[in-house]
Structures are given as structure tokens and as C-alpha cells.
Image: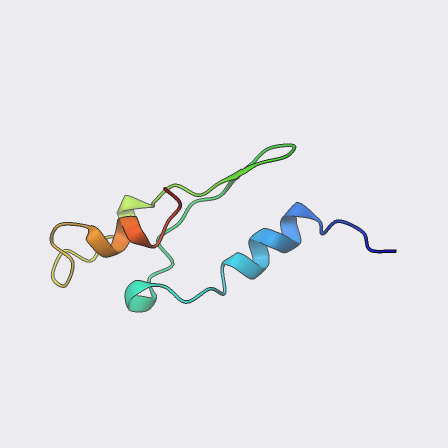
Amino acid sequence: MTTAPDIRDLIRHATLAANSHNTQPWRFHAGDSVIDIPPDSSRRTPAVDPDDHHLMSSTSP
């Protein structure tokens, strides 16, 4: 029998995901059955991503 993973484990593993410029530009907001992953604008890289395309594509829609 398989058990559902703990939400903290899911988030911990998600922080290891490949991402643009290796900046980890996310914030995680966990609820009972959902994890929102909005961009963290404090981790912007305007010199190489002036229009924030990579920042936005590294996070959930």
C-alpha cells in the first residue's frame, strides 16, 4: 500500500528542481490540498532576464 507524500516533502523536493539561472525564484504557499507557487520577485535577474520571462516560466501558471 502506498501512502500520499507529506506536503513538506513535496515542497522540499520541488526546491531542487532545475530553474532558470539557478535562482530558485519561488515562494510556496501550502493548503490542505493545494500548493501555490508564485514567483519571488526579489530573486529577479534583470541583467539577463529584463522582461521576467524566465522568472515567470520557472513558476506555476
